[in-house]
Image (cartoon, rainbow, N blue to C red; front, side, top):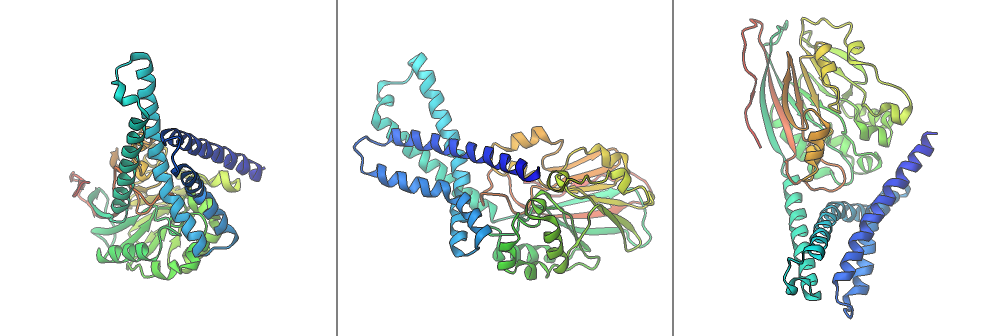
Length: 397
């Protein structure tokens, strides 16, 4: 039954993907001069580029190699370019339709030469946007916060947390990017490192092939390195991913709670998509924390920031999430802002603090437009006196 649902889902996605590509291709062929010798070349190049991502992912499943890597890289960039070409063609067709009824464009704007010029402008604009988005994507920022919790601990007055979400280790986020992540996190000299899901990007084979586990194993914190599952761990096989990550120094919390340094609780939830992939339901936050001492601080890792009030009702002091990528590519951030109570950044509800990270890596295109990837550094202050101390975001985008 689950295989049938996956086939239906994949078929629908492939149909939509093909339709969008055909729409772009058809409108580009109309813009090219009828007698142009470019058309046969354009047809061949477009077909290869448009099919690259699907072909690359299939090849990775069959036999991973440099050949499959090339297809995945080409296809990943095309996903971003395709999205913006699609928006450009829709905008052009909207103007054409409006002009059909309103006749407001000069005659010189409706000639074949004008159509070719518009195609050239769209091509330049999209390629520039994708290049700028790639440069932005490979230059993550540090996001620093001070958060006060009005509770005391036995041994700690404050806690230096380094947090990263949505690393997506794999073909695109490879050795160079992971080494930069490790060096950046270690430079913060954190007490504890927290990875809030989507540590790997679906298929584990590229991670193993590039030996990324040995790189991430260099993360250092005296109180340990902890992570949780995200939806991408489940897409590629959660049990296998978790086993690999734990073999390389990351303790994965799967609907489980631990007491750290006899001072605070750290809880980690299974990903929300668990039921979709293996038919089991994760336990509620209330059930997860029912045996904890609520007088001690409680930190919760929950990959997808849905149903935030459940953490508040369960007595969580700090919830860390990711998943949204804040849309990753503008204007998709408007969609994530409509779906989630907080798509990126800090929020406080009652005594519960929330931070949703835009993530370090990304899914699909290695491109970010409209927001930056980040490594989050949280100075968690334990305020036993109960006197109000405001939490602060120390730097902004």
